[in-house]
Length: 338
Image 1 (cartoon, rainbow, N blue to C red):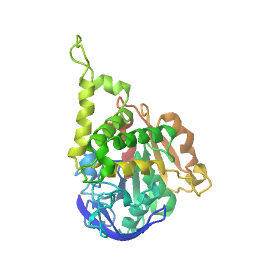
Image 2 (image 1 turned 90 degrees about the horizontal axis):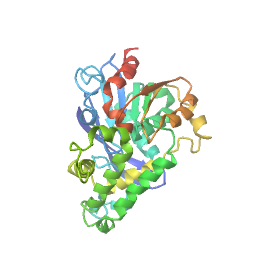
Image 3 (image 1 turned 45 degrees about the horizontal axis):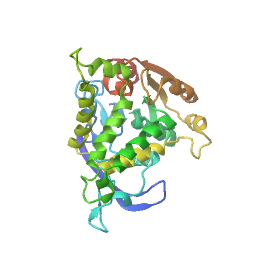
Image 4 (image 1 turned 30 degrees about the vertical axis):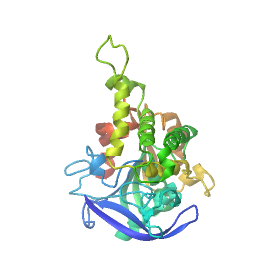
């Protein structure tokens, strides 16, 4: 994948305008090749714009999303730690990171910057738009804002509006950041590191499920006095996010963006907004997903005019969208073959 960047003026949904923000994105080739499928992938919360990095089972040469035979695009969202402008970006007025003076980012802002990249590339029609989790938030928004720009769409483990459950988990993670005294000090981008470790560990519990932890984190010794394997795994995951270069300020902004997600805002409600989507759509639920449980998915997917429902069985909850690649391939491959 080729890393690229555009710089654009941008007005945020909350009102502020910045004269220049950077949007980092990756493409599989320098330009689309006539006759080859164009696939747009929207990334999840802490992922980056290189889907080969975080979805290696599905993206790459010879894989389902073949980087040699398709033009694949993924744009990094504003507020992220991976290149696009956000709280860690240097404010030209102060010469220091923006921290909390960066404008609040919404899911619609993320969709708008994706569409700015689409316009920059001069692509009139995307063959397949795909997004999972908050990537699904972006994809649903994009398909609603520009219904004529997407022939097909796949929304995986996602929803058209944030639920009270997901909003509560995001707030618990923000509280973990706030509990670290160095977070609000804004002395360096290392501020809030301890809080970020805790927030990530909290998040992972909602990403997985009872069955998955029982399968992978059970104690090997039946006579263990104090269970420690799952605890060690939680600490490892918190540390791992920091080693990936993530910072607490970007994490805070992305958690806030989750709360903004409401496809129906200003559009007459969620059902009315979903009815605007023209793409042939596949919605996929994961049976053990605690964030977007099947009963929630089945409450809204039929409002999309041309839609089918797919069902994935997984021991790993919401993260099934990353791990159950054989089941995903069975559902997604037909969208690329027609």
